[in-house]
Image (cartoon, rainbow, N blue to C red):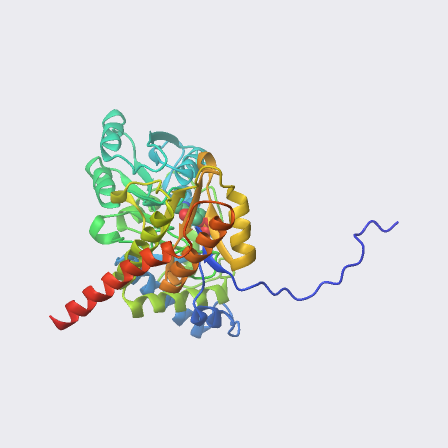
Length: 410
Ligand SMILES: *Cc1c(COP(=O)(O)O)cnc(C)c1O
């Protein structure tokens, strides 16, 4: 008997052109998409190896670091997270982990699976990591070898002070593992100046590249810790001692097949970032965040995070009373090809998350978003004057333009 589904002709897959204003992936620049469509070459082709070196240089630029061990890992941000933990945490190690949202919880999981003991520093969702609590944890656990925290907590849109936290780790003789998945390219991040030891990111957030790559960088101290391990790294795939046979500086031998075309795309995405200038990219995220914020507040939406800790690239706001989360997001997608983010964990159904990441972070998207949201909410009977939000955003842009003109004539 044939148990297969009734015959359905399968055609080529052609996704619609969406505007991605969620928690990632973000829109991909046409130059980056085009880079991916080039011919594949072998992973040891000299021309490819040359590009790998450029990639490392470009990543050092984005991370503001001179770390020799800086390269894109094969896999999403989660692989970056796991790479840092499996290489730096040995069985029996104590690790202080800060949790103020979804991703800190995953770090705790990682520590446990490495046989380490997590010491958890809790802060409320939407609050930044409190350095005082971290200091207290170090005082209570002076044998802690690592401090792990999220610089940009994507589940709430909250920034923590990476510089202060990493300095605390050093003061107590520990290394830092820093999640920069949402921060890299979107908000200030200075690996060397701030003394961060192991940092991972993702290709699909503020770098606006194809998902599935994880920029990694390790300080000399982190590398020395890895070299001095007493136990073998339990993951064969992520063991840096082995990965470096391919990505290191001296030799290049096969470890696993690199995601060749994805790396072309990352090369182009990082080149775009360098052409813009990293400081300009950080400022651009601030500028469009200010306009979006004015618009969302004109609609009457309230931010989850207080102003001083808000991430420009991730704007979480409470859903108004009586408005159905899913209905709104469905209409935005169906009628406007616009994707925004839903709430996670305890914030599910309670917040929307508006991402302005990388190439998605543009005036036309801010205006589309406010216009689409205003009209969908008005249709649902929410008291909003269509056009109010755009006017508020326009006022912010107009003030920015006036200021830029004044500065030009100085
Ligand atoms: C998205 C994200 C991750 C996970 O990245 P994936 O590419 O989805 O595996 C980790 N940490 C933070 C803060 C993120 O925003």
